[in-house]
Image (cartoon, rainbow, N blue to C red):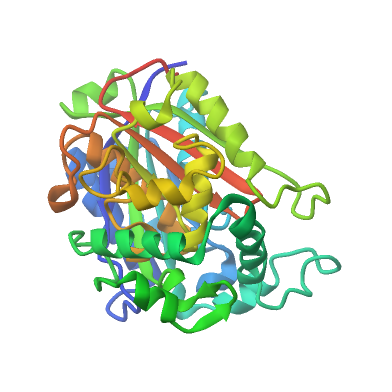
Length: 388
């Protein structure tokens, strides 16, 4: 067992449609940037993890085979991970487990999706159990709308509160050179935008993006020799529940709470609101960021609307959330979770540029797949911390 750190990160410029590059080329862009950031070559990499969304997202079956040559990974161990929106974080966890097991010391994780080339809606509509789940023809949006609706009166997760999330994250994306969408909005514009599945409106929804992200994870000893500023993984966990659990809570994701409790124990977190300097949360719709505030212990149950209204999750607040712009800035689904981890690493190493949070020493990461049933949490710090 050893401490593990992120020693290099890379991202493409995210866009609605990257016609200038293939899926393999998109993944290569991110990998080349991560290797350059770490000062390494593929000869220095022991193993590769490819993370991408369901095959229909990119209309390529077993895309990891296509990526071998593009990544320079020939004759190296390579495995593909897929887990919906949480795919990137699940890929990073797979890499961490390889290092912990002693199978590798330096692992490249590459996550990507080229959603402009696939059948996104058809894929989402066939993700669920064919008997219990597929009658919701709008796929995840229908589930998410029901989830949000259950919390509006009970917890005060109003349309106005969710609109504030859109305003904050889209404003933050303006400072992120990699972001796909760079357009500020107002609360009034969000509330007046076209309804999709009430209470979800079009400005509550992130864009559909082509993009890729890569990180290099290294074991203690190697990490310090590679960079003077490693971003240490102080804890990471990924939990699930049954897709159609009849006793599922409509107020909070229980896998999220379990994952957070596990990671907080590993990292010595007892007061999340005070102990984190920044957070990168994967918000597939604005309403989810509100529920994550509560599930992650950044505020008490029913306190999310007050927290977003206070401005404390904005830049300059007590705990800025999604200084990168989050999913509202870019949403290449298979890469989105790894982007959250990479952005957290950039924050604690002071490499986030125009969206850097001053003196950020510890970052919280959340990501997940499915509408609520797969949830992951990670803690990244400038110091090794307790986590192993």
